[in-house]
Image 1 (cartoon, rainbow, N blue to C red):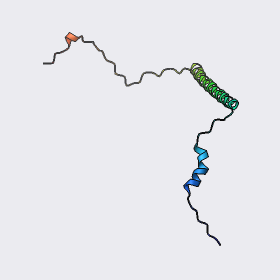
Image 2 (image 1 turned 180 degrees about the vertical axis):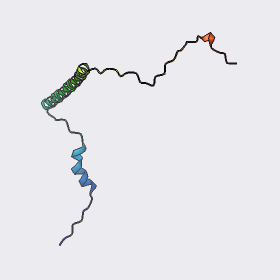
Image 3 (image 1 turned 120 degrees about the horizontal axis):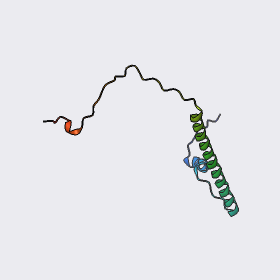
Image 4 (image 1 turned 45 degrees about the vertical axis):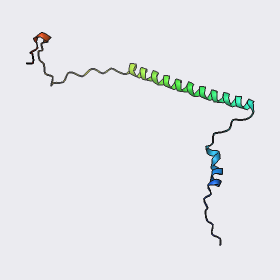
Length: 98
């Protein structure tokens, strides 16, 4: 029976994982470059369109909710209100601080 030991080899691991984290290469064919660029632009336009559409729909739904909602009567003033009479003092009538 042979015992297998695990040896950590960073060079071998780098070779396997290197393709996962590097930016993808641009295709060499000019036609394919243009085609992928157009696909990216179309995807961007679709995402922007749907983002704006969903935002406008949310705003419209909020406005419709606010307009169609039943308005509740304002509650009466609470019983603990203190009524009083006030008079406005003009500046010359204020007591001086001496």
